[in-house]
Image (cartoon, rainbow, N blue to C red; front, side, top):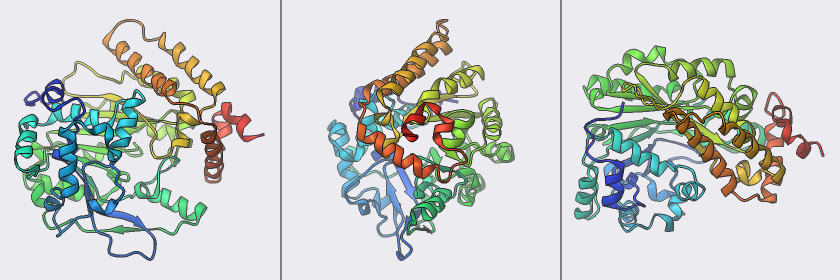
Length: 431
């Protein structure tokens, strides 16, 4: 549930620190102890970045130095990002292009979601701490929100994924693309466990987090050292397993939030998230969505594959009463996330005739949510956000060509070809 003792509202954060502020460089740490590299590579260090989506021309600027997560978070690259954020330069930074592209396209960005999340769940006076960091030569002495990425172990091979986030995807790339890849798994750095004493939020990511032994080692450490009661944890999951076996562990934490990837229903999600079984996923997702003590965020990755059936997903979630509620023990909502890194899987690949079909279905679907109730207003916003993403993304004929080539390769590993799963696409694959 949201933290009623939170020091700063979203409005206050933006008012005091600027509308383009991102708090990740000040309080965040995306800590990665695994890498996918060529089979001949060795000695790959751990890294710590402000967030998982940040880019940089020299990715080694995020490598851990001196075996210290703290020292690395205060190197020149990190300090410059803090300065740029306070100067309002967000939209000038190539490092932040995922968030700025989302915002320009009408979608909620990870930056905005992170500020909302911190304002709800952190006990810290975030505004004052940013000012303290500024006064301390832009050095940050503690981590409030930790993203821990120990492994890419995963049982799915999603079409929009890569080897770095899934062992099954890596196996696909080796088999289909003859990729020269292996996984390097490192131990944590010497000061990692001392950092946990200041952390208020831990986001476990991967990979499929509930299958990773490292995740449970950290959870057990936090319980054994009496830190869990002060910490909110989130787990990124594909809902391939039930949370029931973890409930005793979860009971020790301040709050548990599942970030569940559900990109559609039935055969569409089974195609987009290869390895998924819709009946099993639906059962586990509904268990999470109705759980008394676990809050659930559904993450819907919008692609050219699932956009034509996006109303089916919206209606499924609505029919199962999923969404914000006055029940203070839970916090549930849906994120619409345009696919990133692979532009040819996004809405730029949607030809005008398919774009018209998608928009017509969405506009027609809006009529269901016209009661004026809070939940109908919420779902109207979700549908409109998908419409905005489509309308703000220009069609690129090159993207559709690349989309067809990419999907033809994916179909070599899929149970059914895309044109059978989404028949609207058939003319582009059978010509």
